[in-house]
Amino acid sequence: MAESFSTDKAAVSAANGAFYRAFAEGDFGAMDAVWAEREEVVCIHPGWPPVTGRNDVMASWRGILANPPQPAVLPTDERVYVMGDAAMVVCFETIGEIFLTATNTFLRQDGDWRLIHHHAGITEHRPRGAPVGPTGTVH
Amino acid sequence: MAESFSTDKAAVSAANGAFYRAFAEGDFGAMDAVWAEREEVVCIHPGWPPVTGRNDVMASWRGILANPPQPAVLPTDERVYVMGDAAMVVCFETIGEIFLTATNTFLRQDGDWRLIHHHAGITEHRPRGAPVGPTGTVH
Image (cartoon, rainbow over the protein chains, first blue to last red):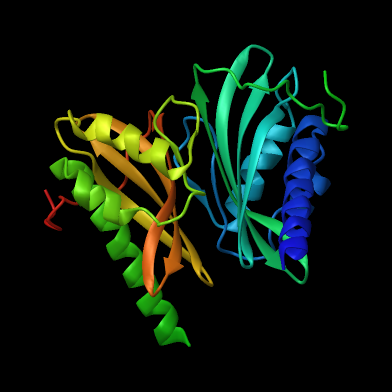
């Protein structure tokens, strides 16, 4: 049970990493694969109102990934919470000297953890850890 | 099944309402009862870094509720997502002419939906609906 929970956390963390990798690489196909195959998804980009429904959420990402932030958005101080077939990651996002906090919610679909919700917003606080690069290297 | 899902959504919505009612009324005891009885809870107040662990989260609320925002924080445009024993509410928060977006995540504990995560941040966008008062009346 404990081992399975630990494996779940690692799998959720990997899914979270795949989200930020797709973001950093401006890879729309990879971003599309990260999101759950269901209508009920929602995304709150920093300062935006919630975008709801898969088509509108992916359209928002198509726009953002056409001109992704430079430097890349790097996650750090990740905390993973698993609740059955749902899971949540709370982390910082670092864009150079800009810091955001993010909540990413995942749903297990056919054994894979897929994103159903992303919420990011500006903070003036710095993460404690160094951001982790999109390839997993610490910068 | 559909009816049960609908009942779950209504129960989650009621739990979300209880959170904002405790907030509006500055009622620490009610706020404490809203949050799950477990160590793994997390709260991102607007602009703050994530506060983690039940003691620290409740200490943050004790401070905020000693001097709650005036006018009260009113939720609107609520969307409820149920995922087994976890659920998520995405809504706007209105504080007079200030608008925030919020994600509230709930876990079913002994049949009750309890908050395990609150994340709120400023937006420049207005909600579509009128805010709902803490007693359920539309202002």
